[in-house]
Image (tube, rainbow over all chains, first blue to last red; front, side):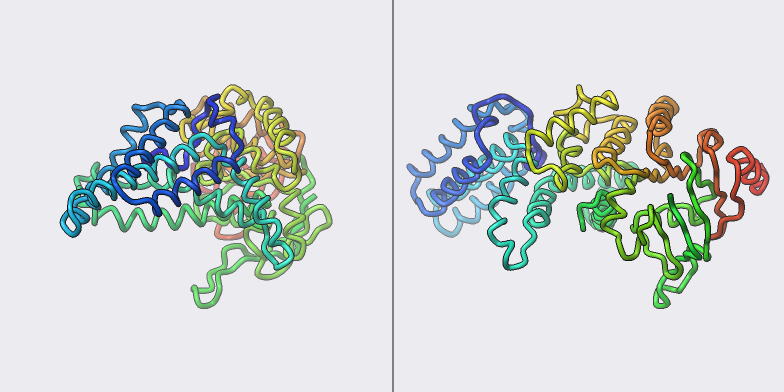
Length: 200
Length: 229
């Protein structure tokens, strides 16, 4: 899922045409229900809802499945810990809830252009302007946070491949260069935004 | 019109105090100006001075009558900047969204912004890639998109810092044609001496100083001779 999170997938589905504010509100309610409701039945129903929305969004299932592997791994570890501490019903609940939440986030970002999100955030934050908050600035930061996820992953994979090409396979060997490149990229992006008059 | 009045750049004392650009005075009024020189010579520092990405340690830089140090915001609206690696410059997921980002400051209506962005993409033959991820573009397409993003803001001057360095021959020609077709004043930092020679004027930078300033073919000859090639 991490490959896709933050990346808009062009389409003409009902969810692509739904206003960003409505989708954000639904995701908020959905996330709250995931936290508030307990039990396997609630978990199953909410997971089914997430799957139905994924189908309605007409997202490419192969990509969703491939990208979901990272979240599945985290869900498995979380489930194992919960199972050890509280038994298997809690294990299933924790793992499936995490997958449902990730699907919800994926549906929002995959069906909503980042500029639409920026417009939404700008509108939401504008009432705070009298107390010194710059709505455009805050919206841009949030937008960049969303788009930086896939870009950072691409940078990580590039750094890993460069390390492997030199015969280095241990993650420790390429994590440091990755962090350095990430910081350098952040500086370059800052310069680029400034040059485009967006940091002023 | 760009004016440098004894503008210099040096690192802070606690970072060694090295001079990146010696005091430089010149006026750039020509439509196409090239800046050439070796790696680390100070070319990019000089280019970055022009829109306030780098601030002069002493002296001043004036663009269209505006002091860059005091009116940085206004100057950046007039001076578009194209980086060597467009990957750092493209921050939105799709092509049209990235161009729209440049218009956010001036165009509030989302539909108008989209229409304007599509117009700019069409100028560069990129309209068919509007909804495509910026990560799937070729090097040349990325650089053209970065240029489109810069031009969407309608600057009066475009500074391009080695825009063809990472490109193959075909893409170099594509980007060069786009740059030389601009109606704006162009300041082109480049290692491509063929491109530099096509400019109206060229500066040769070496060891943080402008060592030659004159007609582009003469500057290219001077630079070539100075490196013994």
